[in-house]
Length: 454
Image 1 (cartoon, one colour):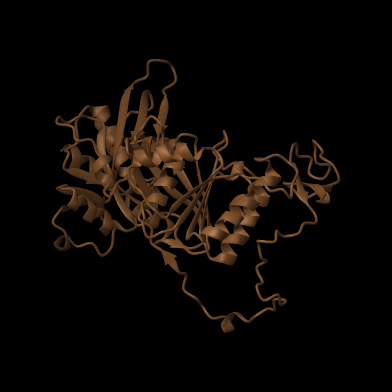
Image 2 (spheres, one colour):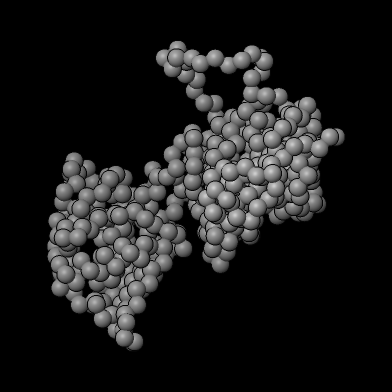
C-alpha cells in the first residue's frame, strides 16, 4: 500500500507544519503537535454517511420531519437512567474511569445480562480465557454474547459484519490500531482515526457502540480532547478502590440530561445496582454522636439523603485548619464566616474538618444547612436528633434560602422514616397537609439553631 500523506497540526491553535515541532511558532505552546492524515480513503467495508451518493442540500428547518430517537432498554437500570431512558440506537458512548475501578466488569456484565441482546465484546487487553473467567465469576451467561480478542480495527469490522451484533463493546479504544496509519497503538493519531471509523460504523449501521477509555494522571480521558466532541455520550465511572461504592455520571449526553447518577456496589460477583442510595449513605449507629447531620440533596431527578460529618476542635498550632472531603472547601469557609458574623459562634481559632459519608462528592447548595448543623453540633458537642434532616441553602446574611424540587426531598425523607425536616419558609406551594412528616420552616440561622438544640 502506498504511503499516505500526513502533516502535523497544533492542537491548541491549528498551525500546520511538515514535521513535528516541540514549540508551536504560532501560539508558543509546547508539545501540542500531533500527526494527522491529509489524504485517506475509507476502508472498503465502511460506507460514507451519504448512502445514496448524492450531494447533500440545505433544507429549511420547518420542512425537516422530526423522528423520535429509538432506544433499547438494557438490563441495567442504572445505565438506562444515566443515558436518559435507554441506549439510543446508532449512538457512540465513551466510557471512562480510573484503572481497577471496574469498567471492564461493568461492560461485560452489561453484555451478558440480557439474553435478548446480541453483543460483540472486543478486548484488546485480555485473552478470551480471562474474559470467560470473569464471566463465570459474575455468574450470568448470555448465549448471544460473542468475545473477540483483536486490536486491528479492519478485522473487527469484518467480524462485526458476519455476526451482525445489536451492541458493540470496545475494551479499550487505546489498544486499537488502523493499518492506514503507521504510528503505534495508543498514539493520538491512532485513537482519533479508530474513533472516527467506529463513529461512521455506528451511524451507518445504526448499531450502538461502547468505547472504554483510560484516564490520565490529571483525571481526564486519555487521548485528544476532540475525542469527547466526536462521541454522543461521555460516561464517567468514579469511586475509590478502597470503598465498595461506584458512581456512574454522565459528563456529556446528546440524548438526555447530564445530571443523572447511577450507584453500584462492588461485591464478589461483580457490580450490584443500588436501588435506594439513601439507605447506604446513612450510618445506622445505635448511639447518637455529635457532629453528624442528615441533608437532603438531588442528583438529577433522584433525591438522596446524605450524612454530613464534622469535627471542630481547638487549633493545636497557630493557624486553624480547614479541611473538606466531598464538599467545596471555599463554600465551607463561607459558611464558617456566616456562622461567626451573623450568629456569633467563635470558630476563627478552631480546626474544622468536614466529610461527606460514602466517598461521594456533592455540589448541591441545599446541603448548606446540613453542613452548618453538623459544625455547630460538633462545636457544642451536642448530638442532633436522628429523626431530623435538613435541606436549604444559606445566604451571606444568614438567611435560609429555598431550593428546587423541595417536595421530592420531603417525600424521600418521609419514605425513610424521618419525623422532621427543616426547610426554608420561603419555599412556595408547600403545605403541611400534603405530608406526614413535620415541616419546620425557618427564615434565619438563629431559628434553625433553636429548632435543633432548644
